[in-house]
Length: 482
Picture 1 (tube, one colour):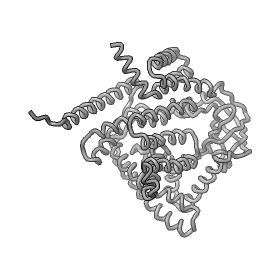
Picture 2: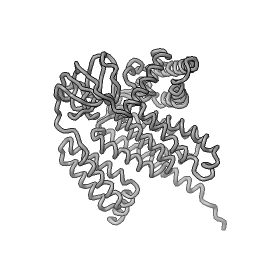
Picture 3: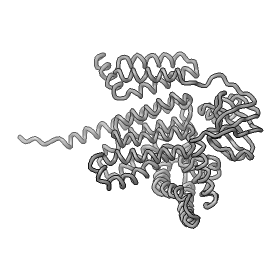
Picture 4: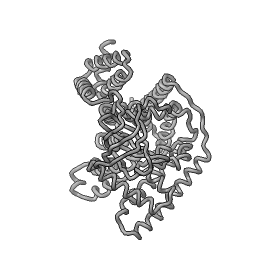
């Protein structure tokens, strides 16, 4: 019995080394933040298991441990009255909100609208009144600041720009140029939607957010891995059509892999365009999972890629594990990989498999929605099928064409933006119609209850997958004759 357990552990560590490395880092970070001895004991247990397993899981865990120790973490909070740092993100509602990285740690600054000319990548000097984030009364906002590495918060009455980071500054100015073109040619509602959903500008998303919240499609207003996947898919199909017509590539290489590698270039350009902040980094790394799946196959390598990305984020952004956005995106990507294999084993039409996949994804998202937000939309699966499909196959391609026509002549831009305006208005009208028929059910889960629910869900799908596999084997067995 012991030999079988050791054999199973060795196979598990060989197939998924970064899963063990991520869990090890997770409990190490929890011990660092809470000083709870139980987390340290769990870390030691995982380390012992890695010694039983293969060399590569032990090596991966050891390297991650070294980087974790050497990477600077948030220390004692120091909130002076004068701070020098770099603008990492910018929001704009009633007041200007700036997230600034400095030697004293992350600082979230409220400022007057007069400083709206500042861009991401600008180096600034701040003077004002700052205090630790522990003084923030709003629990959700305080957790968001903590998970983003913010140490201090306050109001700045004086801000002076002293320089610009070259690469980030260039893409920030380019993004500002595109936003100005959207503002000039498009009506307010369409402009706000495209700025938020395509360029990642959260400044005015509150004014159009209500119908998206009701339909549980608010993730479309925040640039995420879904957006990155659509961008990658758009350019992948474009390059696939081009490369497949070039005999040099067609005869010598795998066209899918070549098209995937070419599509990474505009994807990286888009990543820099939307700001390069922590949510964008997380989304870009998550979208690289799609590229790895195209190159290496959609099986074990995808799980390894997912956990490798989680390890990278945890190593360099230690508090990301406290961010609901990171938790939901990471976990739901894992669920998507798990459900993909199950749906592929169902012998039905492809469109029916797609519908089953979307419905199961919505069901698996409900406990998380109840845990973080206390409610869920009963028709969220249907709303997401309609809204996400039209967004990916209509809004995203047209928006990128809109970005490409920015440097063209005025008449060309005027004609295209009129067409873009009409299409996006129809899309927003459809979202409002869907929001009129929403039905919210209250959900409230504690962490242990949510864990039990997900273990049950994974168990049911795993058992169904096993039964389908046995049934398929029985049907494909050759008939023997006497």
